[in-house]
Length: 472
Ligand code: ARG
Ligand code: ZN
Image (tube, rainbow, N blue to C red):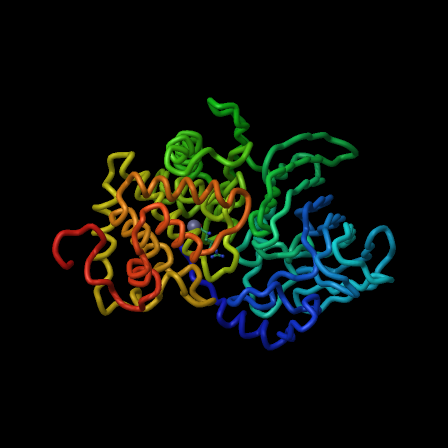
């Protein structure tokens, strides 16, 4: 399920309320410099690690937290900003109390003394609030409460409701998440569960994500989940969790998610070795108003709705493909969302071929013909969809057609080499579409400018489906 979001309005509100000037790059509220979401992220420092110690009570939606950000400054800082909406109790910078103020989704921190360039800067933020009451400018909440729990996830904005962050994929970091919940609740996050204990009527879970992750790929789920732990043939710990309210959908959900290891093994053949040391999925129940799935690192979260018509391994293939396309190699700006959604969608076609349910060529022709030439679908170029359309179906479906067009043009051997080399060249980092095109041209020895112009940047229907006989 792909949901369009009202980000155009949100972005307009953001630019109206947040000064866009970036003269001094640490200008409070200035943003990291994303053309689609100018106020998102921050400058002046780079986060290496987030250590989050959280205490959450589902009944009252009370969240208490201590977030320690281990950062490095990239300029001298009089003050700096973090993306965060919750009420803050105190901030310390390198051990000393700092002044702070909040406006919109920006927390501005002013240390007692400026911090020099290229220094370690440790920021400790203590906070307590009721995340469901926090919001700003019509931006959709990333705090999805159900009957008896919560799932935190969102894209592109995610952390604002549960931890202070440099909330932009350009600044990736490792995570330790310690969550304390009332006894009997499960608390699930990314990576490996390294510890679990019960103390004083609380269950405590320690999660570790020790490979860099974009902040929107961090998730937290609290509830009475049914947990299935396992290990893959290659020794990866598997941790899958199913909401207690799934009812009839629990069967199809399990039949889909539990094939994750098999899907992963298939995808490794095309994309290269799986970049993480844990695997899993979280399926939210119908009590949680979640209309989408998200590739949260090592542990995607799925809306129950994907399993309403039976098992669905395609959504699992999609979210697991994102572990390479989006997670391992992340966008540098949100305009390049095609690098995530085009490839994750194409991975569904590859999986279909493997399952004997239709070849990529058949799916390309079917997808092309599904949208008449005068459909609005063709007016949204997947390479520059606009901030209100980053999750438009054109980014997914035409995005996959663009990938197929590349494959047809360069042939399977070069296509595989391009995908694998891309992953190796940008391991645990970022990449942009220009770099992807350059790599494709280098490996294939072909000028591909025209092909990418046609499929990614032209707001009209290309003459025919890639690889199709005739002119479609
Ligand atoms: N990256 C997600 C996916 O492809 C899309 C998330 C859409 N987000 C949203 N808030 N609607 O599966
Ligand atoms: Zn996707």
